[in-house]
Image 1 (cartoon, helix red, strand yellow):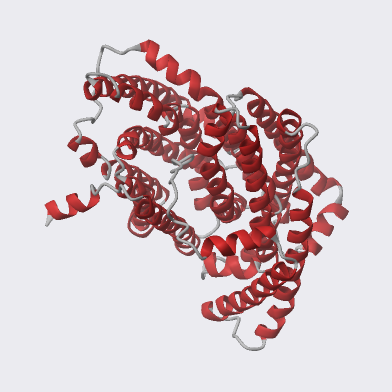
Image 2: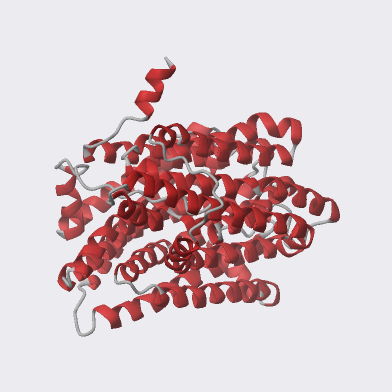
Length: 561
């Protein structure tokens, strides 16, 4: 039985259609488990001091992961290993290279983790300056426990290079699924016995499972890294030089979130939890749309630029932007109009009050305004990477991150000094009767900063690659806005109709009200696009009529804990 399971897990997928369906299925499953995880946290733990501590404790391990562990990323290591495998003694050379990278990785991570472990009491004051002394103590110990997670997941991503190299997509796809399962186990079984520490134990269990599922495959190919005292530091430096721009870009986002969590710690109890819940919800469409299109376009952009085929390069950039706009604007309308139903269905529980639902829904609506900009930035950054220019997006993202942080401080202050601004946002989002609305200043600042970011990087990108060339994006924007307005209006008025049909005091009643209103809105939007003969709609319709899964597969690795 064990042998059959091992054989199945290590099945090699040569058919791209098989791999595409497999990866898509597990990516979707991982997203679903992420939502289940958040619902369990809302139901079992509840938005309050305990969950605030848990989310705050995540920030430093997450920063270590994106700033240190991600230096040994799959994206960077794969070309090195492929190059080693082409030599006369390719397998042995690849194993020595992995031993070198693993040894350097472990030394670096252990040294940094020990330093952070010792300094955690001081760091905790920076992460959550608004916590009381008891919360500080729990935060320090919880963060220290979680320091194991970037080491384990970083190592897992390192050996993930081998599982991808040998097309063992099933195993690689299972890793994030098992990570979420571990966290869910911690919520259900560890939290009742160990409190906040139990949640941290769940994270460590998930990280162990993330790593363990890949080890048998790597061992079977005799490529499991081992510690060596003969580290080829030149190779390590070569890897780091390539990794630094990408790692710094990821770090800016993590540092921004740390600062926002610090600001939220000074607000009402539960603000960190509600802010994180809303950020996680808006991240789902960003992951599905932005990451999917940017990852899919990257290999095409690399090949086009390498061949100096700038026409193909531009066509794929513009095509990607048009598809992002086509998908993102309608989803923005759905999220804004049905925000309360979405949040209540996903997070609604006895410990998650209606007031918390409304506040989280309002934050989601503010975050989702930046869905288009976040997704386009991901595509344009990869466009720059494909051209070999990693410095320009780095500096633009650095400036934009600073703008977001400054806006966070400024808008939060304006909420207190300009009641008219706060009241206007509360009225628009229908949360005038909810306590703790000052938290909305943070997603509001994030959305504005994201719009500034996309404006800056697009102006730069257009100057570098589209000087004097028409893009044709305006047509897509106009038609998508028309369809979005139709979707929003139909969905909005449909809510009142279904309000009289379904009971809003039950889970299924709220779900069916939102689902039915959303379906009617989407149908109306599709008819609108059909009547306008929208090119993006026609392209999607044609793709759905073919076996679109028979395409090359590109797999993004985990970018955050």
